[in-house]
Length: 422
Image (cartoon, rainbow, N blue to C red):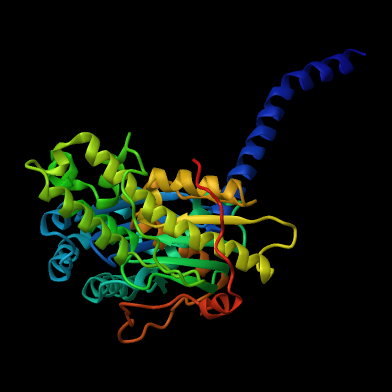
């Protein structure tokens, strides 16, 4: 009896120690499990130099941005009236090493810890693309890591899946930037249908041309660092979008875009106003707001009408999910425009679509989107180059997937009568 009581007392004293051992074991197992996951995730460095932004980022396969760095040339582009390729190239050469090192330092990841290096090799300005591609190739040779060439516009389409994992294939994607306006059906990491494309300039360039003509870069000192689209949005607040009339381009029944006519009409409006005034338009707050709101709405209306035809086309061809889930992704620099986002949300809500947008900071050019699309390609083993050629090819223009615009034209889909009451 006495022995039994002593044994019970001993076990009671031992119990806290046993619990500590069990808890420690659980901690170690949990840590090992986390480390195992950590070891299995791809770590990708992305490098972007397609135009006038030098960007780099380290991203993992779970969508975590571990470190990013960006050097923008926007103030130079505003001052020079656009991007000058030779100047942009010199800026990339001066900044790319510091930007990449900055991203790696912030991430706490060394070059040897990376699984691959992704870099934009198309489309873009060739002299700018070459800077990033050559730098990435050199890093791959030094570290013996594979290189993943990335299509710049595909990266814009896929970056939404970093912030919105619920976006599943297939989905419609509208890409709007300073150099492109593309309407896509994204079927997989490597499979695209192009429904529509800009036949002349892009909406971002249209915004830039009008902003320069209105001299919006000189209204306030901070405006020099903003794009034309951001400036038109800024000075459109409180304006009446019906104050100025604009034509509706491209009467033909397809999903292509044209922005030259709208831009020319804007310039004619400005010239007419200037001929009857003694002070610049930018100094009349109400007039400026009305004009900017009207031009912004004209661009949106044109894009929206082509998008609504695309909705009808994918329904006719049964290209989206049979369960009824329909998703529209908008991305690219122009997709950060608040007015456009509100308008596309209105359209989607009235058409049975879910709207998904990357955060505004991921809509403009950046290294994160390049790294993330690199991770998507790495995960399926698509275009992961372990044996590097002497030189990675670059391309100023490169279409995405199969172009079905002729098929859309042949269907003669009538224009939508939706009223944009938002």
